[in-house]
Length: 102
Image (cartoon, rainbow, N blue to C red; front, side):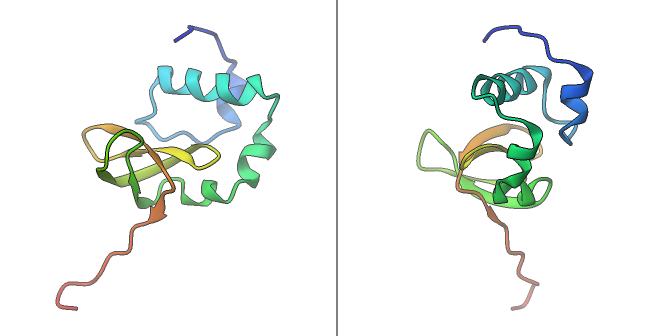
């Protein structure tokens, strides 16, 4: 991964959760900037509505699924933080929590 710099303004344009590391941010910005996309393009994607919500999604490599807090990255790809580890996932869906006893 390249160690490109990004500006403080870049970071202010997005609402990153604390668990998104500097390397993840660099990866995020490199992807968006190489296609000359801006924050407005990012927030137009409906998956950004899932940011910071409990979601479930298949992990990119493997047949496993991850449940946890979601942050959208690109197209149908994002990250889920399960409280211990960050997983790169696709096609996230909001996790439906069923009340106990139902």
